[in-house]
Image 1 (cartoon, rainbow, N blue to C red):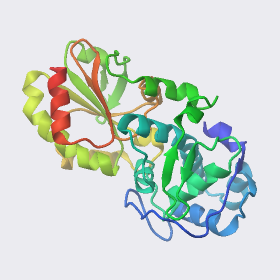
Image 2 (image 1 turned 90 degrees about the vertical axis):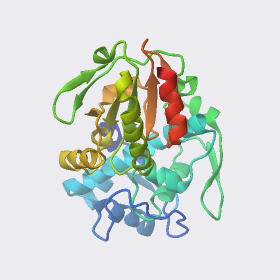
Image 3 (image 1 turned 180 degrees about the vertical axis):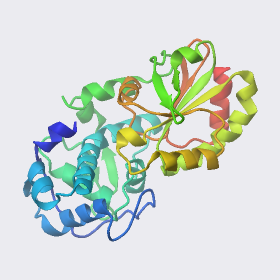
Length: 306
């Protein structure tokens, strides 16, 4: 996707005021933060409706490797936000807030989610599939059909709307944090869940201790959890040491793996974190959740796999 984005003309709209979401604390924040500088630049220097060629923005204004990497991440997020909105809505029946969008995409700059939505509103390639409150900037309505029928997004989101419950989870293979491989064949005949998360994702941080407690209860039944971390495919600024420290401090007693592009795609293009697939002994998904769930809900899902 990054190669395509580098040569596309993207219409950007400036935001100089009215940012309504608070910084989330999900990622690095500060006056020298690269991504925050880019967001401030867009807000301070672009006129509404002004067309900007991404390659020019990258080469002439933001030229360092760190700045170009941040631009790549922002424009990758730009094309994933519609998928996230529809996945979130289909999974929860609700419309995400600006804060929830910021949490899901690790946006740490003040007003960043609002800027990204305003960019989207101005881009002629993106149908106007949402309406926002003019004062708060929050999304008030969402037209799922416009996205589903869009040639760029429809095919990717079709599997999500169809749902996973009652379907076999696709085969997978991932590398654990310590370099071993774990795959679906290793789990044949066992109940398990795949927990897709990323570092410092607030709903994931709230979910992890619940899973640790539940695993302690159900591990003796043969139930397994695979914690598939998405940092690498999301290009987040966390290294292996950060991830290893987190799983040790959280006291994971189940395998932590690196999610791959292939597995993410096979699982329906996961864009809501955490996403959880509860799989029975036959390899069939019996529960499929997106976003934070209460411990009682997770407990019932585990029992369903057993």
